[in-house]
Length: 230
Image 1 (cartoon, rainbow, N blue to C red):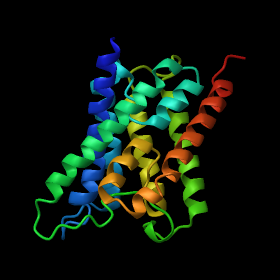
Image 2 (image 1 turned 90 degrees about the horizontal axis):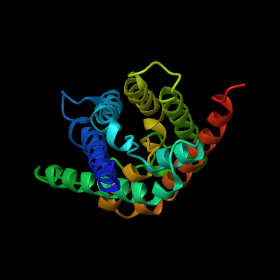
Image 3 (image 1 turned 180 degrees about the vertical axis):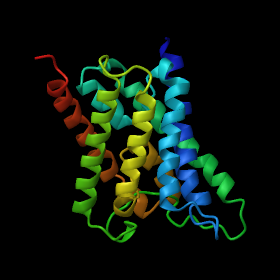
Image 4 (image 1 turned 135 degrees about the vertical axis):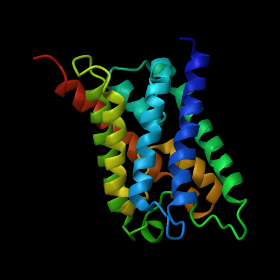
């Protein structure tokens, strides 16, 4: 598959992840009487990855996430030469998804960004959790996400079920960590909406790049040992 097609797939997939996942939070989570709540938002994020894994997994691998690309590279599943282009496509896709979401959301009278599904800690954490709690959460949740991805896509795993395991894994991660950080585990997802919200969201964005990448890299190292043949 050509690099241009791989990058196009990553752009579209990350666009869908941000529009679908963050869109469910911005447009539907708090809708009077019919709001889907944080359980619905968790499911929405999982569904974006599940649907795209089936749609573009055979084209680009369906990373949709700079941390996933780093984790796969460290785990020996992805060439380092493709890392920077993949991350660029993912970030641009996340920004495009956030921009389209903003156009839709701002069509409602009296619209205010109100965080715009951004990730945060301290006073910007949904549950008021500290920076340390947010850092640990993002490292551990991304670590587990990559363990799921690396294990489910292992050649010895049951064939054809990886998208389901990965999508449900991301749903579970959101169910755990939305109260802490509004759940990132994905720097591209965090960047797109932070640029719309601006201010505090951009000032805290560093954590939502560093922590997921650290967690993903650790998972790549661990799974190299865990999944190796004795």
